[in-house]
Length: 338
Image (cartoon, rainbow, N blue to C red; front, side, top):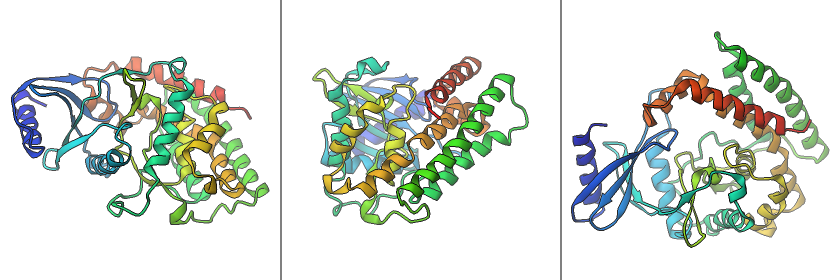
């Protein structure tokens, strides 16, 4: 985005938020995978200006999804998310609180207290399901039956199987992925059958949750007071808690060990939710979602996702990035026990 347009959008957002005073600097932050981020240094405080990616093949309204979600999340758990100040639909941009702190770079930096904060965020977010939620839509790729989850993941796998030109390194990864996916899909259905979980049954409204989506410590900042602020909610909305659990424990950037699973469930959900039937359902899809995340890691090999990546960071070295993603995908596949 050119400097003049950027300043005009920043001024409009500040005016909408009724914030007066001069802009000192606007500096790009090359950390997002989908959108353009800027640190807006203002005479009163710092902000994040986020310019959202739009493409005909990507129908999700990222701006509206994230902004509406944050309006609710900030009211319920302001210690866990940045404050939303204003947005402009015309320019697909929004102004958010700048959170001062450090990113998580390795799993060793994530302490049990941080995992507790993540679980507590989910609990607080869903504590009152009766107010101000009618305008929240389903999360991106929300699924409400086991069959739908399996079909969604199958469609992601199929995207790669239909590629005409595949380099040898990617081909080897895809071969392993398909073998593992066949076994995991069969095992998931067997698990559901053994535990009397109907795979076609639609999860009722009262069992769905408001989910951050893409939830994990790769999208978080650790503040100096040791509180964790979670970021990036453009995929957020109503979802199956099984997907939220699958996503959280399938992240590769900052992996969370499965030994924390029971404690996370106990802190994230009301005890009444964790009757055996629902807990079995929460556990049924964890390995299946690792296959999904393997596909997400490899999205850089699909043109539509490459376009989005270049939008967020035009200077990225694509070939180096592809090599790193192949390593991550291989790591995730090796973590699966079949």
